[in-house]
Image 1: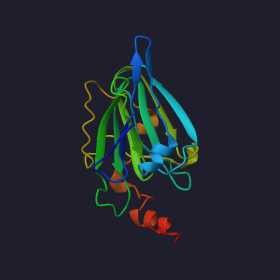
Image 2: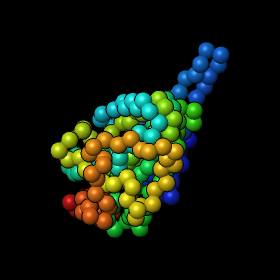
Image 3: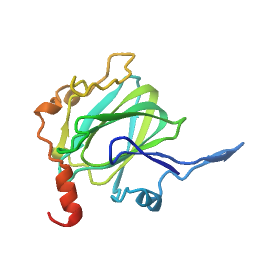
Image 4: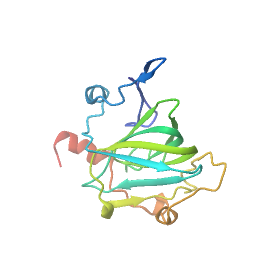
Length: 195
């Protein structure tokens, strides 16, 4: 696997290798030891599989509150998506900034998004299937979101059509009106054992 630490601290782009012949290919898409060696030390406890039938389906921007905050290892196994992670860690020098990466069945890339980020994606070609592993179990009462079209975030979703949104995602607030439960300081204190 090839690991690339991105310009926002904590985000990691992963490209598993594929070995193939006339029959097809073989690929190790998840290795806990390789992830740990590259700084991803969280345990992954649940895997989700999402199908989107149409181009322009936009899911996000989502995060889950502590104590059930989720890191996500995201990959696209059918079609392609633009995957977006927004830093919402108070005190971070990159607070409010985002990274947008195309993930596809063709490029085989994965994105590690730790807790402390809002995450979302839009389907670029359909049909799309996305599989992602998470570091804590789904807790619907702790789900939160940020408006996908928040002008302060200035995300270029590369939309060629009107986005197809859930009712919930149509009502998400702007980042400026969200009190983020995440902080780079609490992460540092937790690492030192000073909860």
